[in-house]
Length: 279
Image (cartoon, rainbow, N blue to C red; front, side, top):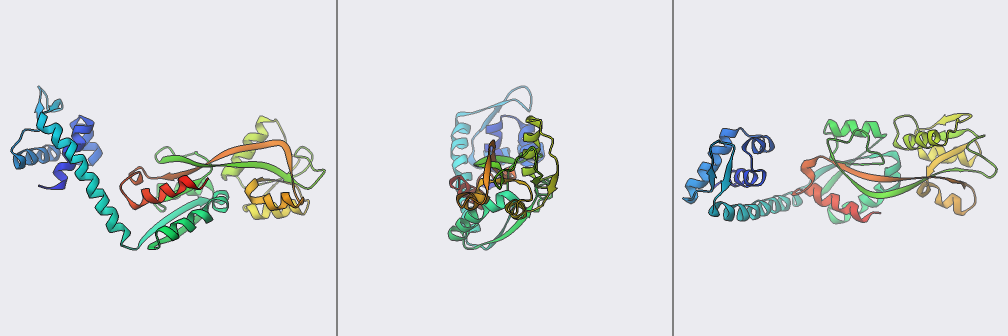
């Protein structure tokens, strides 16, 4: 008995349609039918009862039992593959936007290295648009981003929430002072632009910077009002070097993004679970 036969039968029993099963497994319909036939011949049992067309069928009593046990077999198979992966050094490519890399990535990487020392990490930091492109080209396995633009083909989950504010020295205003913002294409810039439009604020000047650290340094020198995550400036706020310009605050979620096939049964799925405890 081959695992492929079980996989075809369990998928067919779950989807209840030959064409959908064929598309899901990326196999031809004749191949699916051959797998089912070989499994029936091996067991000496009829597993499905066809009606008038090849697409319509129902499971026999034996088919229902094989379906339930087959699911368990496939889960065991995935577990064994996971054990194999764990005992082999593997490359995990993690992409992150600039903001998320500053806020979440250090703790995430620390947990990975503690729990999975055999994993070799490659960290890629870009703005949102570039990260999405890297995902599409399969150049990264998991991404951490602060926006959902362009992520429709992927599995997306919220893992944390960030607080964005305008920070500056005393006596500065977002209406009368230059605004120091990330470049176009950045997720943080998108939130800033949305807020300014909603408040109908026309900045007197915009200074663009591709680094949150640079934005903070410019704000500390009194050159404008920086739009930053609280996590980036909490020490400066406690020391009184920067103040939040209340009530201007934006809350945004952080997302973990990956290909759908990483959702379960791989080492990637285990790594993804670590993110649930980062917030």
